[in-house]
Image (cartoon, rainbow over all chains, first blue to last red; front, top):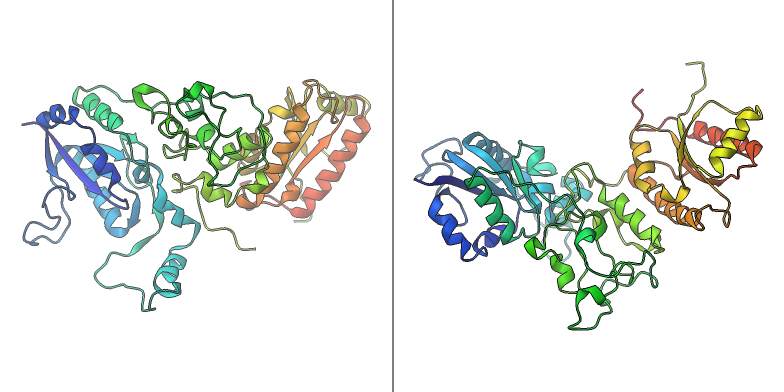
Length: 307
Length: 138
């Protein structure tokens, strides 16, 4: 029998599960060594027993647990604890599990404000009561997995990369550690940097200047071109063995999906410092907290203080 | 509590002008409140906003950043960079629930010992009016 694997998804779009499939041919080698015993997206294994006979949510015992998504409601929280209890190694899969991801942008508002906006305040829908029957209550904010249970391994990214998932699973099967890169995206970026902006900050939809087909080593740093690029405050690794960051390869700025360089880093302060020191105007950044904490809202974003 | 509130202010002084200025204030026996803790940095331009925000979130009531006068920078334009960053810091302070007035950027040359003492006196008074930082634990 192979290594038993549990997979569970919480507050997430499902993109990180697709990434597992996206591993491609190496997945065949991995699948031969593992036994997936619980994975809601893939198989019909029910939490309260197949006929609903149990009173508590239960997942099978497993060697490895993969969890994607942050904690948004009490069901997520209970299941996270259950997964931790039943799995020897717990892996946070994707930025939502690692640092809250996109859903954690909701942390800029209180849960009550979110519910009001969605169920009562929306202009285009009929207002009705806020649903509270037969559904788990929302938590007070979106939590990263590691804020609720101890996590053994984090695989950031939105979605995370197939190479990373395959690498981590292979390392785990071989009993080796799988450390994350500690450098920033800028450290792996091949573009030309002169530490001076060429102009002012551009609007979000304005394209970068580059010669199509020319190598990236001939393109000017996007930030210096006035395009907001989260590279300075984002962990590298998205490029995998190819090195060059994923978005930069497509002549697009880094969105920051790999999250900050450390758990204690504050990407907003890092980015405001980075862009002001090359001569861009920090006042022009719309909604700086959300812009620079786009994938790292859990524990970092909170409702603005009332004055 | 009859005694007045004694603020804790971190002063980041550049090696070439302001630190020497602070030194001169000392050797000339200029009087100023004992509220500041001077940290010498090579240039005001190397003070990353992170350092300032960290000082605040770890309980400083105020942060004073001192550099050479514009045009006098030992590294040509380090202080101009500091000015840009100071702007970003002022923008961000409300995000952390702090008043902009808790941060100040001043130009102090090596010959301006008296001015350094004056700046510290003024700034201490300003921070005293604002009261203790919400991050302060003691």
